[in-house]
Length: 511
Ligand code: HEM
Image (cartoon, helix red, strand yellow):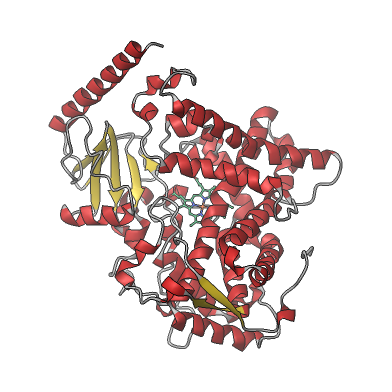
């Protein structure tokens, strides 16, 4: 394709976007939002860094909990309140449950193989049904031993090299997910971990790069990768190789271990035991590979970031940490490590976990949903194809739901006698909304609970350097990364051992 052709495509694309949006603007009333520029619309109004805060500010400026943007012809609506999320993502979930797809992410980089990207419909329902069967609350206890093994590994790693905390978190969580899905027993440095980690990073990189020209002018996808300026094609080809590896390589290894009779019980063995229920083998295998690969992508960074947030929070809030120590010592007497069965006796740890999920949700604006049909809300038009963000952070910091929302106070979930308050709102919004709410949330919460209980039973986490500075609770977000999956920026801390070192399992923990 010549440069002249590309310019014609570019011009035609921009003119049609302009004409279409000008036509729609004259006829309909969208929810309130910044006015925007011709053609580009609100391209420069959509907050890129800390969008969860920016969207709240824009909502306040326009006196509305529902805000509308139009970027290069695409509509975007942000819901900043529980009411709006309930009215649209939950009560109208038949219309509000598709996913946006982009050419760069889905088509060129291969993420269309992820079932998270599927629109609401029969294929999505079948994936979701199989996932739910294996990750609903009653199915989770089968994974507890694997989760406890990961937590115990972490204790040993922290004793040996506390300065590599995030690296250890990535390993223990990644290994635990591979163990859950495939019963693989991976060691630090295993290439399988690197493979799935790298692939997962491509999704974050694609999203973090912002708007790709190929998503504005779809015709660009036909430009060959050697063409000057087609760097996106080369990047996409490299990413696609990694993404295909994520879906194909671990699944291929598992099938081989089944063939030689080495496979152990796990999520994949359960799926494959039902393979004869399906007619189309190739399609069924693709579905199983997607279920497996997505578990890693959706489950690893989210848990790692939440655990990093936990350690960071403990450096800032010594009172909460001290209360957790008292509760743990009362039950464990410094003589044993916690078990998930201790949960009933340790409501403070559960309250601390809830407060963590509320105080800084790891995906503060969840994942976008897309509308599959036109709809109206409060007299305003929301067209089919609108990308809709539920602002989890805004809801979890709404003072009418959580008084003094910027304070870290696990006690808000407890009664005066220290038991869990059944009337307190569990902060589930960090896991998304409606029919697309995170189906891994029960698994994630048990893994978080058991890891937090282990770390606090064994260590006191102390601030070092910057972290010991007095932090303004209203201004705490600046210490977190500003994009889609948000974790603490690098910080220093010290781990002081509170129990005899002999309590920490050594070696490679095969049980
Ligand atoms: C702290 C941990 C986690 C957080 C905060 C989290 C958060 C989220 C959020 C915000 C969504 C989007 C929901 C929506 O569209 O409204 C989501 C979707 C999803 N999550 Fe999680 N997640 C976590 C852990 C996990 C784990 C451990 C797994 C798997 C084992 C998992 C599997 C999924 C899947 C498959 C989806 C897509 C569901 C769909 O599109 O129907 N997540 N998660």
